[in-house]
Length: 219
Image (tube, rainbow, N blue to C red):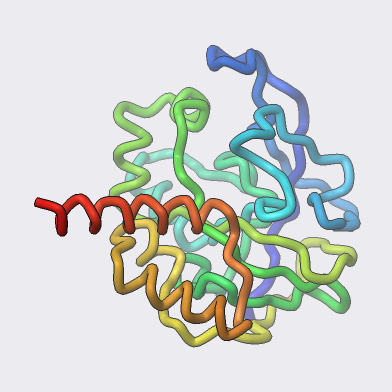
């Protein structure tokens, strides 16, 4: 059974060398159930709202199986929340989820997979590992951002069920590691058919793919 192992929200804002000056990446498990609304977990915040948070990044999910991989690679524990995730899952192929895939969590909450996580300098400072952004990106184990389709409570032990998949075949991992014109075509076709509504972050990547294609054709 796929389930939520831990629900994490910000413990405290930490000083950070980035342009914002603080970061809310310090997420830690909470014992009680929390309500999830369209902009995320009750009591959670994002310091850099230009790049984090908002309706298409209301929640960030990371699989315990991928955390175990990194624990072995780094020789250190990767407890829930260390990567800044809100939901630590078990038994769920988060990276293999299709963009637009919907999950039911517990009895009420319904979420939709919107886009992969792009590692940033704040994440590298958090981890204090050499070449961390490059290493994390190269593995493609990014985890997934989620939008909220139906608000509800969430807590550790909640079952996660895949409700639907758009069927275009473009996964979180495949889009992050190898987004190309074929994937862009598949996603846009699915959106036209009403199977999903692509997040602005996905449209931005698709626009860059189209621009590169035009530059090649013009040569």
